[in-house]
Length: 612
Image 1 (spheres, rainbow, N blue to C red):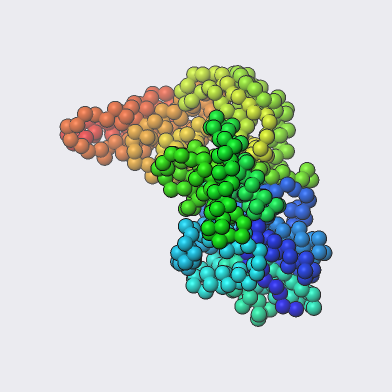
Image 2 (cartoon, rainbow, N blue to C red):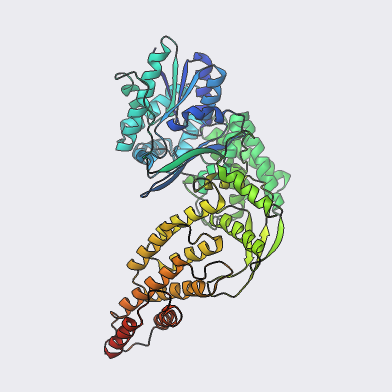
């Protein structure tokens, strides 16, 4: 039996309703969903009973590339509804898209980033035809507030945009692979239906590709043998979903669409008017009962004027602005364009955007598998007495104080929202022997749990993960000596400076490519202090730091011999770099490979050169 294809816009309640109705009506043998095929045998984890929004977080790492991506789901995501309705109907569930590590997703951190840039011309023409500002408003006008003939209108819309857009090689690879799953499911299902839920941009191509070809189940691609990677579920949030905060795909104002999904457009508009008014009053702005009535009246008037059967999102927002904002606005209203809210937006407008964005955060079921880092970090904090909130003072001269400091610095390097350092040593030459931190033990919005899961991509323990994260920063710094020195100091604070050969390789390459004598000198000064003195942090005599001292000194001398210039005042930062070389020769030449005679030769030649 031929498959039924449902083309969707990701995170669209109208599309989610169509998916729900289709699956309930057909009761298919298979429900095939655009999602990472390598997570296919773990779809059951998505159906444990989480509170969305949640996401599949996928990571990949090899010697050439580091990649992380998310496949987010909220309650009204068509893909989420397809999985839950498919299970309720007794269907076999399959994710049919290429894995997130695949080169087809190389430039994409979000699997469900829509292809709108590729069909901007046709959607721009539609926006002009319907006299709306952008595709979000166009979409609401065409689909979200009018449930009649949704399937036919979606087919016409996606047929039009795909017909005038060129698919790239990445899309072609994905569509060819997804079509293999469709053909195999059709063959296996026999006379029973198959429902396919993908982005609407892919639907026309998939319908054509599925019409002919082999019927064997496709192989799930495996990453190269020298790579590491995996996927885990993470709690997500409406803030991360919202286009106004820079989300790469889908719909803005997720709280509005959540209420639209649950209660319909009239109830969503009424509830959110009250929410906005309550928020403004909470900020001390006077909003009277007559203002509230005016907002509802203006929203209703705009709804009728624009020919909508119920209030659309922009009817609500425009009505609120007309009723509650009396000042002249310096900027365009943010919902008339796409992207993050611009700085300096009117406070009332910002409150409206925030209210429609919402602050919901997903929660994972207690039985959800997590990477080892989550349990290991939690256990380490408990063992060290760092699992309670409040101020903490750490004596770095005691073994326990140093161990606790390293644990907190590892979480800081991994960007886990947990602790804030108030004071402590700031450079390798800093004599401060005490640190002060403020800990926040309550993970109220789930951000720490999500961040720990995502940081699990770096390694199983905080020490391993921090070392890998520092490797990544070191690679990104390139020849930026100040950046490299900062990474080295963080490595010292984390106690993992000599754990990674990649740090040594990266910093050697960075030094060899550096051309700023002053930056090299600042790095040499800091690292020399760590190598000479820092028995507290454990870097005194470190082979890695000794190598950095040797290579920085050689590079500074080589660059100094090539300096030419006129009679301008001396560059004091360059002179400080030469002083750092002097100190290295004075204090380390007996231990490290530093050639005093060669350095003196450079000094004599520079002194003799009139253009130096």
